[in-house]
Length: 213
Image (cartoon, rainbow, N blue to C red; front, side, top):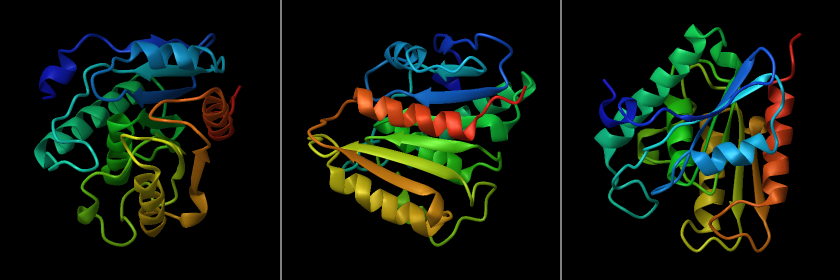
């Protein structure tokens, strides 16, 4: 079903320190692996949350200025939905799952959240944009009309200019409840992450996925 993605190496996982009652699925950028992000989440973890960082999400034509690979994007989104289903089978309801990603991984997380019928807790979209944006017109009809979205972007990003981020945030506000879309920029940050950004991500995750026991 998911070709190279399901046969790819198992995701890098930061297990919950106690029983997992929530999960974060975070997708890396082009040419990367999940390991670096798993380490980053290990540094901001909460004990009841499992952090899953899959490998091998490299989609040709998924950059803000290239010809978009529509079948590839849709196929990858189906694979993410399968990962979410797997966690639901493991006992974590989809509304206790946050989807996120960096660069093309963030693009994919936004696309998946807007097209799935699985109700999610939120999306953390870092240094990215909304792919296949012309396919979205007006408020979405799916399960995530009221989803919380944290979008973060460096104002000195040379690969995905911050204007792509701000235009994406404006577009997202026409698709979901605009009160739930937050766009943060980081002075001097390039196409990478920062300590302040990860602190903001942690605050967003911990607010949406509080302990339930």
